[in-house]
Length: 87
Image (cartoon, rainbow, N blue to C red; front, top):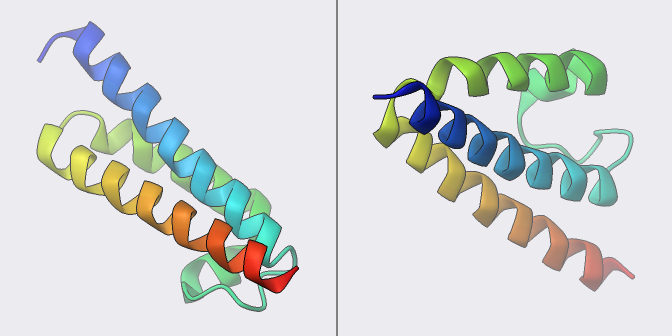
């Protein structure tokens, strides 16, 4: 895999994970309704740093990256629907 391909995958991972974080913050700013206990335990600041590091690590492998991107976008869509229904 070339450095350009890895950079594109890293960018897509960051975008997908950022959408997940943004919609999670919209639904539960205090993380009380967060399903992931690790994220709840880490809090916002440390979980953002952990996700950036994880995106960098997973950008070296195509298939896991694709699974993370698809999962993050689906979770972001779900969070947005929950946010809109709560209004």
